Length: 264
Image (cartoon, rainbow, N blue to C red; front, side, top):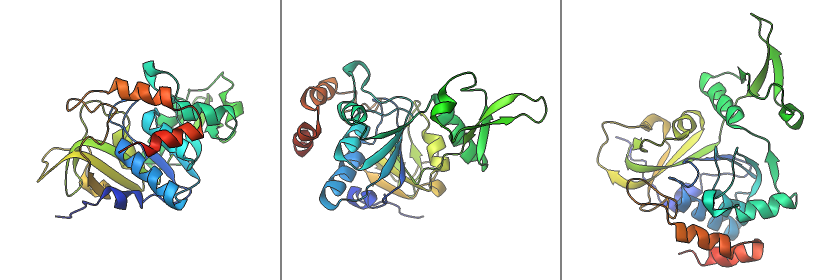
Protein backbone atom coordinates (compact mmCIF):
# COMPACT_ATOMS: atom_id res chain seq x y z
CA UNK A 1 0.00 0.00 0.00
CA UNK A 2 1.15 3.53 -0.80
CA UNK A 3 -0.36 6.22 1.39
CA UNK A 4 -0.80 9.31 -0.79
CA UNK A 5 -2.84 11.33 1.70
CA UNK A 6 -1.61 14.90 2.07
CA UNK A 7 -3.08 18.19 3.28
CA UNK A 8 -4.78 20.75 1.07
CA UNK A 9 -1.90 23.12 1.79
CA UNK A 10 0.62 20.54 0.62
CA UNK A 11 -1.41 19.81 -2.50
CA UNK A 12 -1.38 23.47 -3.51
CA UNK A 13 2.43 23.41 -3.42
CA UNK A 14 2.44 20.87 -6.28
CA UNK A 15 1.45 23.55 -8.79
CA UNK A 16 4.49 25.36 -10.20
CA UNK A 17 4.82 28.69 -12.03
CA UNK A 18 3.92 28.44 -15.70
CA UNK A 19 2.03 25.16 -15.33
CA UNK A 20 -0.91 24.09 -17.45
CA UNK A 21 -3.44 23.50 -14.67
CA UNK A 22 -6.48 21.36 -15.53
CA UNK A 23 -9.61 21.33 -13.37
CA UNK A 24 -12.06 18.46 -13.36
CA UNK A 25 -15.83 18.48 -13.02
CA UNK A 26 -18.34 20.05 -15.38
CA UNK A 27 -20.06 23.48 -15.34
CA UNK A 28 -21.30 23.81 -11.72
CA UNK A 29 -20.93 20.14 -10.79
CA UNK A 30 -18.14 18.47 -8.80
CA UNK A 31 -15.64 21.28 -9.16
CA UNK A 32 -12.44 21.33 -7.01
CA UNK A 33 -13.46 24.54 -5.24
CA UNK A 34 -11.58 23.93 -1.97
CA UNK A 35 -8.37 23.37 -3.89
CA UNK A 36 -8.89 26.52 -5.98
CA UNK A 37 -9.38 28.57 -2.82
CA UNK A 38 -6.23 27.16 -1.23
CA UNK A 39 -4.20 27.77 -4.39
CA UNK A 40 -5.45 31.36 -4.61
CA UNK A 41 -4.50 31.92 -0.97
CA UNK A 42 -1.02 30.62 -1.68
CA UNK A 43 -0.65 33.00 -4.61
CA UNK A 44 -1.93 36.03 -2.71
CA UNK A 45 0.52 35.30 0.09
CA UNK A 46 3.63 34.42 -1.92
CA UNK A 47 3.09 35.53 -5.53
CA UNK A 48 3.39 31.94 -6.72
CA UNK A 49 2.46 30.00 -8.74
CA UNK A 50 2.12 32.70 -11.38
CA UNK A 51 1.75 32.65 -15.15
CA UNK A 52 -0.58 29.64 -15.15
CA UNK A 53 -2.63 28.42 -18.08
CA UNK A 54 -6.05 27.28 -16.91
CA UNK A 55 -7.48 24.28 -18.76
CA UNK A 56 -11.12 23.40 -18.13
CA UNK A 57 -13.49 21.72 -20.56
CA UNK A 58 -16.04 24.05 -19.01
CA UNK A 59 -14.93 26.70 -16.51
CA UNK A 60 -17.12 28.01 -13.71
CA UNK A 61 -17.07 29.39 -10.17
CA UNK A 62 -13.78 27.78 -9.11
CA UNK A 63 -12.07 28.98 -12.29
CA UNK A 64 -13.31 32.53 -11.80
CA UNK A 65 -11.82 32.56 -8.31
CA UNK A 66 -8.43 31.63 -9.78
CA UNK A 67 -8.72 34.18 -12.57
CA UNK A 68 -9.65 36.86 -10.02
CA UNK A 69 -6.56 36.12 -7.95
CA UNK A 70 -4.29 37.16 -10.83
CA UNK A 71 -2.32 33.92 -11.14
CA UNK A 72 -3.91 32.89 -14.46
CA UNK A 73 -2.22 34.19 -17.60
CA UNK A 74 -4.27 32.33 -20.21
CA UNK A 75 -7.44 30.26 -20.43
CA UNK A 76 -8.27 27.21 -22.54
CA UNK A 77 -11.95 26.32 -22.30
CA UNK A 78 -14.96 26.01 -24.59
CA UNK A 79 -17.24 27.67 -21.99
CA UNK A 80 -16.58 30.03 -19.09
CA UNK A 81 -19.65 31.06 -17.12
CA UNK A 82 -22.10 30.37 -14.34
CA UNK A 83 -25.00 28.85 -16.30
CA UNK A 84 -28.35 30.39 -15.32
CA UNK A 85 -26.58 32.70 -12.86
CA UNK A 86 -24.96 34.65 -15.67
CA UNK A 87 -21.45 35.61 -16.65
CA UNK A 88 -18.32 34.77 -14.66
CA UNK A 89 -17.55 38.29 -13.39
CA UNK A 90 -13.74 38.24 -13.15
CA UNK A 91 -13.27 36.38 -16.42
CA UNK A 92 -15.55 38.93 -18.09
CA UNK A 93 -13.80 41.88 -16.44
CA UNK A 94 -10.26 40.85 -17.38
CA UNK A 95 -11.13 39.48 -20.83
CA UNK A 96 -12.88 42.71 -21.81
CA UNK A 97 -9.74 44.65 -20.87
CA UNK A 98 -7.42 42.38 -22.78
CA UNK A 99 -5.66 41.39 -19.55
CA UNK A 100 -6.28 37.68 -20.02
CA UNK A 101 -5.11 35.60 -22.96
CA UNK A 102 -7.93 33.43 -24.30
CA UNK A 103 -7.13 30.58 -26.64
CA UNK A 104 -10.03 29.87 -28.96
CA UNK A 105 -11.25 26.36 -28.19
CA UNK A 106 -14.22 24.13 -28.91
CA UNK A 107 -15.29 20.76 -27.61
CA UNK A 108 -13.52 19.23 -30.62
CA UNK A 109 -10.16 20.92 -30.12
CA UNK A 110 -10.05 20.07 -26.42
CA UNK A 111 -11.23 16.48 -26.87
CA UNK A 112 -8.93 15.75 -29.80
CA UNK A 113 -6.00 17.32 -27.95
CA UNK A 114 -6.53 15.02 -24.97
CA UNK A 115 -7.03 12.01 -27.25
CA UNK A 116 -3.73 12.71 -28.99
CA UNK A 117 -1.93 12.80 -25.65
CA UNK A 118 -3.62 9.56 -24.58
CA UNK A 119 -2.48 7.93 -27.81
CA UNK A 120 1.08 9.14 -27.32
CA UNK A 121 1.15 11.13 -30.56
CA UNK A 122 1.64 14.84 -31.27
CA UNK A 123 -1.75 15.50 -32.86
CA UNK A 124 -5.15 14.01 -33.57
CA UNK A 125 -6.86 14.54 -36.94
CA UNK A 126 -10.50 15.52 -37.23
CA UNK A 127 -13.07 17.38 -39.34
CA UNK A 128 -13.89 19.93 -36.65
CA UNK A 129 -13.15 23.55 -37.64
CA UNK A 130 -13.04 22.73 -41.36
CA UNK A 131 -14.86 25.54 -43.20
CA UNK A 132 -14.75 27.95 -40.22
CA UNK A 133 -12.60 30.96 -39.35
CA UNK A 134 -11.24 29.28 -36.22
CA UNK A 135 -7.93 28.20 -37.85
CA UNK A 136 -7.20 31.88 -38.48
CA UNK A 137 -7.40 32.48 -34.72
CA UNK A 138 -5.26 29.46 -33.85
CA UNK A 139 -2.29 29.21 -36.26
CA UNK A 140 -0.86 26.43 -34.09
CA UNK A 141 -3.73 24.20 -35.25
CA UNK A 142 -2.69 23.11 -38.72
CA UNK A 143 -4.19 21.12 -41.58
CA UNK A 144 -3.01 17.81 -42.97
CA UNK A 145 -3.94 15.69 -45.95
CA UNK A 146 -5.37 12.23 -45.35
CA UNK A 147 -2.83 9.93 -47.08
CA UNK A 148 -5.57 7.47 -48.06
CA UNK A 149 -8.26 9.63 -49.62
CA UNK A 150 -6.69 13.08 -49.97
CA UNK A 151 -9.21 14.76 -47.65
CA UNK A 152 -8.08 17.87 -45.81
CA UNK A 153 -8.30 17.48 -42.03
CA UNK A 154 -7.47 19.57 -39.01
CA UNK A 155 -4.51 18.41 -36.91
CA UNK A 156 -5.27 19.27 -33.29
CA UNK A 157 -2.09 19.34 -31.17
CA UNK A 158 -1.80 17.10 -28.11
CA UNK A 159 -2.66 18.61 -24.73
CA UNK A 160 -0.66 17.49 -21.69
CA UNK A 161 -1.63 19.17 -18.41
CA UNK A 162 1.15 19.59 -15.88
CA UNK A 163 -1.34 19.21 -13.02
CA UNK A 164 -4.94 17.96 -13.00
CA UNK A 165 -7.16 18.43 -9.94
CA UNK A 166 -10.24 16.23 -9.77
CA UNK A 167 -12.88 16.17 -7.03
CA UNK A 168 -14.17 12.72 -6.14
CA UNK A 169 -17.04 11.27 -4.15
CA UNK A 170 -14.67 8.93 -2.37
CA UNK A 171 -11.09 7.72 -2.56
CA UNK A 172 -8.73 5.42 -0.74
CA UNK A 173 -5.29 6.42 0.51
CA UNK A 174 -3.62 4.64 -2.41
CA UNK A 175 -5.27 7.01 -4.92
CA UNK A 176 -8.15 4.97 -6.32
CA UNK A 177 -11.21 7.18 -6.65
CA UNK A 178 -14.87 7.15 -7.64
CA UNK A 179 -16.29 10.26 -9.32
CA UNK A 180 -19.88 9.24 -10.11
CA UNK A 181 -21.71 8.96 -13.40
CA UNK A 182 -21.21 12.52 -14.65
CA UNK A 183 -17.53 12.10 -15.44
CA UNK A 184 -16.95 15.01 -17.80
CA UNK A 185 -13.41 14.53 -19.14
CA UNK A 186 -11.97 13.64 -15.74
CA UNK A 187 -10.85 10.16 -16.76
CA UNK A 188 -9.02 11.67 -19.73
CA UNK A 189 -7.38 14.27 -17.50
CA UNK A 190 -6.20 11.52 -15.19
CA UNK A 191 -4.65 9.67 -18.13
CA UNK A 192 -2.90 12.69 -19.62
CA UNK A 193 -1.67 14.88 -16.74
CA UNK A 194 1.85 14.73 -15.36
CA UNK A 195 0.54 15.08 -11.79
CA UNK A 196 -2.99 14.18 -10.67
CA UNK A 197 -4.40 15.47 -7.39
CA UNK A 198 -7.65 13.96 -6.12
CA UNK A 199 -9.69 15.84 -3.54
CA UNK A 200 -12.31 13.56 -2.02
CA UNK A 201 -15.45 13.90 0.05
CA UNK A 202 -14.67 10.67 1.87
CA UNK A 203 -11.59 8.54 2.43
CA UNK A 204 -12.33 4.82 2.67
CA UNK A 205 -9.99 1.95 3.58
CA UNK A 206 -10.09 0.38 0.13
CA UNK A 207 -11.91 0.69 -3.18
CA UNK A 208 -12.39 -2.44 -5.25
CA UNK A 209 -13.92 -0.47 -8.13
CA UNK A 210 -12.61 2.89 -9.28
CA UNK A 211 -12.98 5.45 -12.06
CA UNK A 212 -9.49 6.84 -11.42
CA UNK A 213 -6.81 4.30 -10.58
CA UNK A 214 -4.00 4.61 -8.06
CA UNK A 215 -0.95 4.36 -10.38
CA UNK A 216 -2.04 7.56 -12.13
CA UNK A 217 -2.71 9.59 -8.97
CA UNK A 218 0.05 11.47 -7.17
CA UNK A 219 -1.83 12.81 -4.14
CA UNK A 220 -5.15 12.47 -2.32
CA UNK A 221 -6.69 15.14 -0.09
CA UNK A 222 -9.62 14.63 2.27
CA UNK A 223 -11.92 17.59 1.55
CA UNK A 224 -15.49 17.18 2.82
CA UNK A 225 -17.79 19.55 0.91
CA UNK A 226 -14.77 20.36 -1.24
CA UNK A 227 -16.95 21.12 -4.26
CA UNK A 228 -19.34 23.53 -2.50
CA UNK A 229 -21.04 25.76 -3.50
CA UNK A 230 -21.09 23.72 -6.73
CA UNK A 231 -22.95 20.42 -6.46
CA UNK A 232 -21.61 16.99 -5.69
CA UNK A 233 -24.45 14.61 -6.54
CA UNK A 234 -25.73 12.63 -4.74
CA UNK A 235 -24.09 14.05 -1.60
CA UNK A 236 -25.24 17.68 -1.83
CA UNK A 237 -26.90 19.98 -4.37
CA UNK A 238 -25.80 23.21 -5.98
CA UNK A 239 -26.04 26.19 -3.62
CA UNK A 240 -27.71 28.62 -5.97
CA UNK A 241 -27.91 31.38 -3.38
CA UNK A 242 -24.15 31.27 -2.86
CA UNK A 243 -23.46 31.44 -6.59
CA UNK A 244 -25.90 34.32 -6.98
CA UNK A 245 -24.25 36.13 -4.07
CA UNK A 246 -20.92 35.83 -5.87
CA UNK A 247 -22.29 37.40 -9.05
CA UNK A 248 -23.92 40.19 -7.04
CA UNK A 249 -20.85 41.00 -4.96
CA UNK A 250 -18.02 40.65 -7.48
CA UNK A 251 -17.44 42.88 -10.51
CA UNK A 252 -13.78 43.96 -10.39
CA UNK A 253 -10.51 43.16 -8.53
CA UNK A 254 -11.42 45.25 -5.49
CA UNK A 255 -14.79 43.61 -4.97
CA UNK A 256 -13.26 40.19 -5.72
CA UNK A 257 -10.70 40.75 -2.95
CA UNK A 258 -13.42 41.72 -0.46
CA UNK A 259 -15.43 38.63 -1.40
CA UNK A 260 -12.44 36.30 -1.24
CA UNK A 261 -11.32 37.56 2.16
CA UNK A 262 -14.77 36.65 3.45
CA UNK A 263 -14.45 32.97 2.44
CA UNK A 264 -14.00 30.79 5.51
